[in-house]
Image (cartoon, rainbow, N blue to C red; front, top):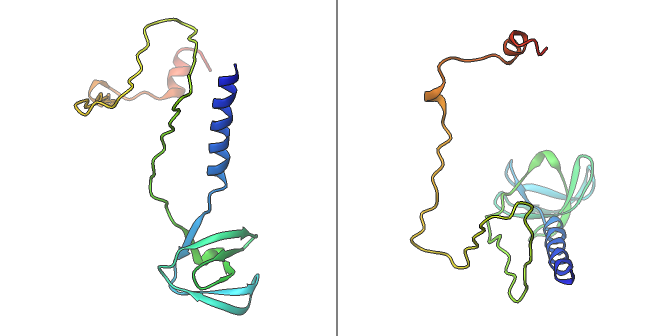
Amino acid sequence: MKMIKKVMFVALAVLVASSFAAKKVKSKIGDVDLTKEKGGGSVVCTAGFNDELTIVKEADTDVLVKGNCGQGWVEKSKIEYVAQAAGDKSMKLEGVDVVGWLDNPSAVFVLENDDIDFDGVNIDRDFKEYLQHTMDREQMEMHNNEN
């Protein structure tokens, strides 16, 4: 029972850490001015078109961002989110025994090592060639007196 609690705690910690990950944005209209106050004001600095900015705080129409040139407010309409590169999403549970139970006991296989020659399973889910005609849900329900 203690081991399950430890595993759940680690999973919760990873979930919380990923939810607080910094969101990156960049300008979508060219160089953008970062201002001291929301809604405009004195310009603190100008962020370049390719500069990535980190969101510090969000308001209704403005966002407080921090970049290489400094920190300031910018309108949400002038920025866009930057897609983060896919990273390693695996978890290593070294030294932790993972215990589980099945409601329906059957053969279960766990692959411990990655096999280089394993190509995977190709699942083709295209059934268009087997359909002879289209069906309308409402017409089928009316035909079967289900409606």
